[in-house]
Image 1 (cartoon, rainbow, N blue to C red):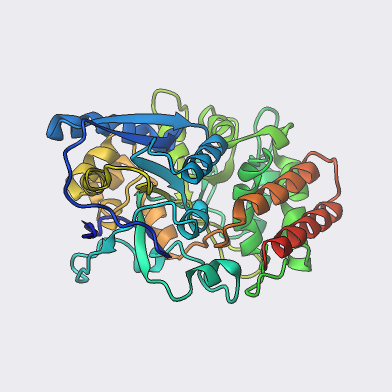
Image 2 (image 1 turned 45 degrees about the vertical axis):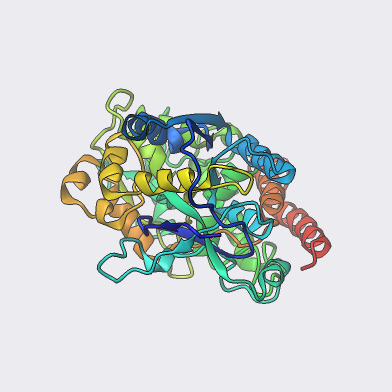
Length: 428
């Protein structure tokens, strides 16, 4: 069976060693392609450009949306049943180790490209397990070829935002705290903690953790979330930053923090690109457009500022009978011309050339910071098929500490013990 070739139009691809089914060539043109997508700003531009594809090809694009946590569970169930419900699926990058080793996705060979053609950052090429040594994920893939099973459609990395009309850019997390304490006043918060349980608080915390020299695991998968560096990072989040944050931080999610920034009630926070385009720089809802600047993550005691990769990828389920048509749609969506329209509709670009386009930078003030954040080589979340369970454990315990229901020491001990039990049971 012939494997399809996708052009390398994306910022990040998922290269998983596995024996996923190859995308079939030929076949009749389908009347419709159905996409399972995450509900929110991540798929807004996809919805906006989809009708253009129908005009071009006659193929209708149906987008079925699910909230973040429901999408993961829906995909797990669909893949396990080998159901042909969806022709394309949006996937968060930390899900790729699981879906790759589960052989849930059709594969394509990656087209060889010269440096002149290669438009994505080579430092961000893979969603595979990275530098970890012996683990079950790598053992499953041992001896198998690497295949392209997902293409980035949301070039995403976590950054930092601050009110540049009120002060200079913080270079370190110590300066972040000093600015938070200095600027906190009635109905104005020095820092907004994204503290909602599980994924939200973990996403807010990991760049701080890494910048403080901590981590969830070491290179041998030993749990390190309860060591001294990691505990210091936890205390910084749930005590130092919380002191300048809004009450009820344990319930705040991404849209909440960006709304506080947009209505002029916050000085600084971490931020995802989608929040910027949809809220903070959206003239129809923001009171601070032009007053907020965006930078890569500030440095911690380690001397480094480390952001977090959060790409959303598009892949083709193994059970879809429309693999060729789905691959054609991905090629169209990630083409240079479509990407310009995609950006115009609020999309986060997946091409380095788009991020560095001077005209687009004028319209999208965060593009330069996004490009710099990607060049700085942000961290991936640990490349294990157990990550969703790990994140739930860690995020639940961090949330308890932030809410004052547990001490930082008790929270990291409980999280570490539960994660160790989980990983041991998974064969680590």
